[in-house]
Length: 400
Ligand SMILES: Cc1ncc(COP(=O)(O)O)c(C=O)c1O
Image 1 (tube, rainbow, N blue to C red):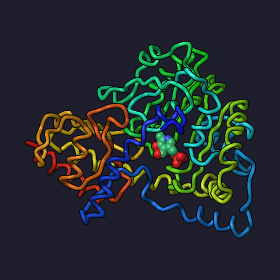
Image 2: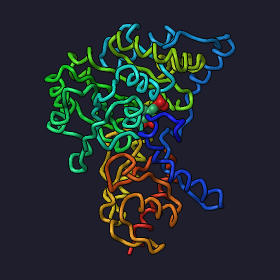
Image 3: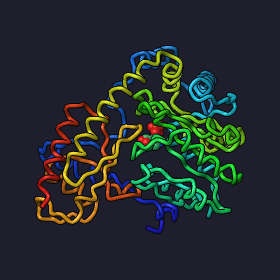
Image 4: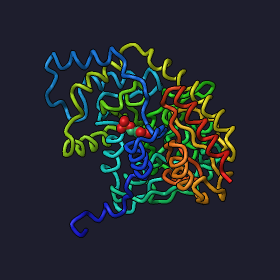
C-alpha cells in the first residue's frame, strides 16, 4: 500500500506469529495444546516489588517523570552495575526505557544512518535484524554453528567488520539458544574489537541472572575495561525479577549516546511508567532471593528437557549455559513422514506437524536465522514440560 512507509516493507512480520495463531485456533477448537513458546518466567513478581508499586500509587507517584528515569532508579542501576558487573557508571550515563526492547531501539534510532552495518550473530533474538532495518541500517548476520555451541568465533567477527560497521549486537546467555560466552571466549571477541576502534558493542545482558554454574556470566566492558567508552550495556528487570509486564529496561553507556537516546524517547513515549520505576527500585535494591530461587528451578527444568529431548528420535539437544530456552537440532527428522502424510522438509514443517499431531507449540529455527532447529521455552512447570517432551518423543518416534 503506497500510503505505508518504505522502511516497513523491509521488516518481516513476527515469525513466531504463525505458530502462535495456529496454536490459538486449535485451543479455541477444544484441542489440548501445550505452548512452549513463552519468552517470560512463569513465576510471579516478588511480593516486595508489588508492595513498592502499591505504595507508589498511594503516595501519588503517578505523574510524568524525567524522560529517561527517576534519579532514585538511576542510582539503583549505578549501584547494580557496580555490585554485579564491576562497571562504574555515573547517573548521567544511565538510561531507563519501557523495557530493554525500547532501550535497544532508542540506541539504534539514535545512531544509525542509511547503509550503516550492524553485526548480528545468529541464531538471534528475532527483533535485532528488524529493528536495524527499521532504522535504515543493514544487519550483517554471522552464524554461530551448532558445532561451536551456537557461538561465533573471533575469526568470523574479524571477517564481518567493514569500514561501515557501527555496532556488534551481543547477547549472552542468548535467546533463542541459551548459549553463554565464558570470560575467555568473550575476551577473544573483545580483542578483535580492540583492533577496530570504530565498532561499538550493544550488549544485551537480559538473561544475566539465568546462568547455570559452572558457567559464569560476564559482560564485554567488564572483560575489557577499555571498551567501556564504546559499549552500551543493556539490561532490565523483565527476566531477572519476573517483571515482563512492568516494562522497565535500562542501559549504561557514554553520556553523549545516553543523551541522544533520551532525545529519541522524549519524542516517543516520554518516560517509562512512574509506578513501574518505583517497583524496579525495589527489585534492584531489595531482597535478592528470587534470583537464586528462579535459577535453581530453571536449571532443574533445563536438565529435564535436555535429557528427554535427547531421547527423541532424530533430535539432538545441546545443553545451554543459561536463559530458559533450548534449541535442539532436528536434522535427523528431515525427509521423514509425519502422521498426516506430509514429508518434513524443514523446521517449519516440523513445528507445524508437531502442533497438528501432538498439540505442542514450539517455534521453528528459521525464525531465528539458523536451522533446522526449534526453540522451546522451559519457563513452565515440570509436569507440563514432562508431558510436552513425552509428546515430542512420541511424534518423533512415529515419523516414518
Ligand atoms: C534477548 C532479549 N532481549 C531483550 C528482550 C526484551 O526484554 P524487555 O521485556 O525488557 O523489553 C527480550 C525479551 O524477550 C529478549 O529475549
